[in-house]
Length: 104
Image (tube, rainbow, N blue to C red):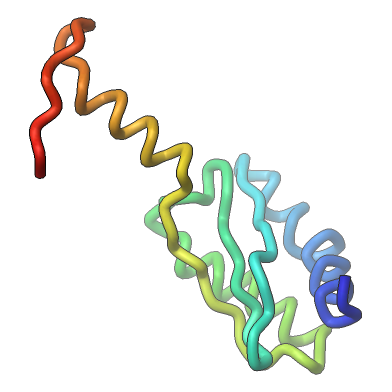
């Protein structure tokens, strides 16, 4: 792991994750590109209406304060393959019985 990524992970573990865990959430570092750390909020923080506030006031504030190589932190909002599969399962079932899948 690159030194900057290690530094960000250390900051997340020491300063960010304890606060998020109090609310049943967590954060994962996805990648760092051009001085921007991309993170995913997980657990109760994932999809929370306050996710953007959490990102700005907790994650970004701590990471940029402790890691000189990172100038910004952004939320990586992508849908996981597991969530797509879960959605497919729901959409193909009706009242517990399999139904035909229609093209969308």
